[in-house]
Image (cartoon, rainbow, N blue to C red; front, side, top):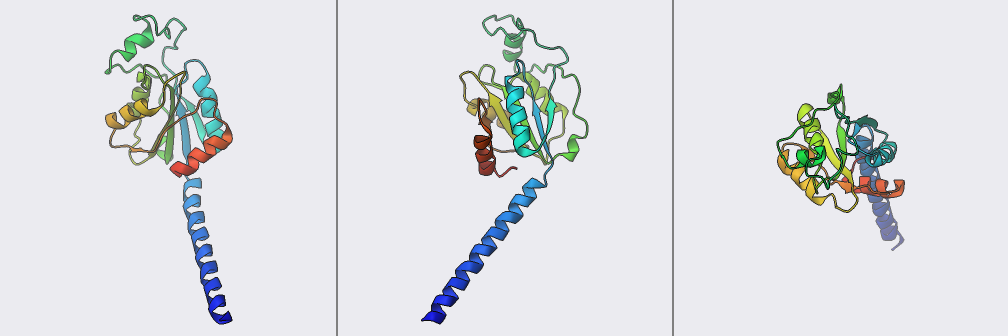
Length: 190
């Protein structure tokens, strides 16, 4: 009886150790990944979220800066003639970015952050994606919003760029580090 109990305990112990070792190998694979946190922020809100995310993943930050900065008049969504309204009403619009991210090929994971405009990613995000080779990389959207979820904007990005390896995105409004880490565990990116 004791031999049987001992054998059972040994089997459980070895199985537990093997599972822990396998999980450690999977985590080390992701922790060795080089991570970029690219973001567009018109008012600073998305920049603050990107900084928290960058600290949580140990990634490099890269602001997606427009060649022509947005003014408050440009961001007036109540004005149909404002720059942001005109851009968002034209799906083919691609606002110029100040500069491309050099050495993007060295990154394994690229987080792309943006404020949600009209339930979508601002058109400058399309400019960023189309100006950089992201094939073969893990791409993860994150966003900030005053009232929308990330759902539609992420769905549209995935449909527009189906060849990219997308992971589940998240809205990072006032999100703390613990919540960010929980999300990273779910999508298996660290």
